[in-house]
Image (cartoon, rainbow, N blue to C red; front, side, top):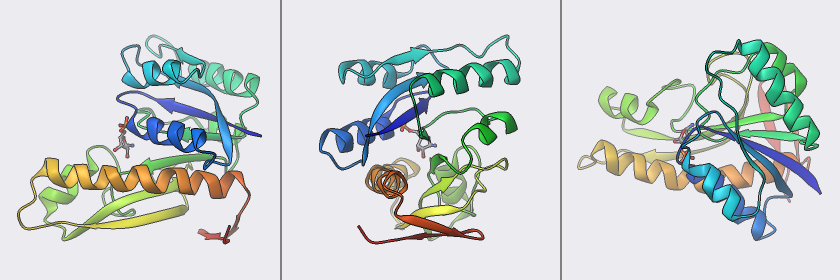
Amino acid sequence: MSQLGVLISGRGSNLQALIEAARAGALGGEIAVVISNVEAAGGLEQARRAGIPALFRDHRGRSREDYDGELVALLQQHHVSLVCLAGFLRRLSAAFISAFPGRIVNVHPSLLPAFPGLDAQRQAFQYGAKLSGATVHIVDEGLDSGPIVMQEAVAVRDDDTLESLAARILEVEHRIYPRAVRALLEGRYRIEGRRVVLEAA
Ligand code: GRF
């Protein structure tokens, strides 16, 4: 069974979606470890409740190299073959990325390449975009710039508030993240340049 590592910093609703997919046998692997850089992250408790090793590692006062080195070692100890970022609010060092080449994924709350970075739902809303959405992408050294694995659009309604738009985007994240992870874990994809081509189950 493929082993997955999940990195979080907060609430953990995408982690929960991954946990539920794994429980239903719909993830193509199991979550071996969850690591948070924030002690109070709600996702740590959710992982513990699901019987998954859940670790807090404080990044404060440490160099990026030192901190990322420890994370890589922990993930390797748990035989992780795919790293999922699920609201992990830190950029990864080049050394971390090269330890898992093409095997780190992130979920982002916009239709990339529009609105990378923090607060993407607010960026799209304030820009006046009529369409936003969610994206699962492979992580490279840029900001939310790696090859796109899966994407789904969400229409911005005239009567939307930022909160109502963000809630519909989050539902899409919860649906596409486990599906994208499954395709990657089962090896049902090939990469052609920047294009990730998924093959049917
Ligand atoms: C999600 O919107 C995700 O797209 C972004 O951070 C948020 C994390 O939410 N990268 P949660 O912790 O998974 O609930």
